[in-house]
Image (tube, rainbow, N blue to C red; front, side):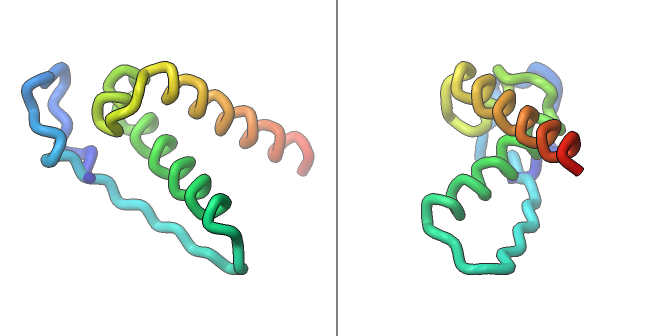
Length: 86
C-alpha cells in the first residue's frame, strides 16, 4: 500500500490505490506469532503516522477503529517504556 496517494476525505477512493513501504529486518529466529506481531506493529504505525486518524487507518487496513486505537496505543506505550529503560 502506498499511503502517499491518500487524498483528504476521499471516502470514494478505492483501497487498492493505497501503498506503503515497510522495511522489516529479522536478525534472529522467531515464532510466526512474533513475526506477525512485528509486521502488524510496523503497518499500523506507518499508516497512523501517515494519515493521523484511527478512522482512516481502520478503513485502509480493513479493521475496526477500536482495533486501531487499542493497538496503536499499545505500540506507543511500548516505545515510551523502551525509551525510559534506556
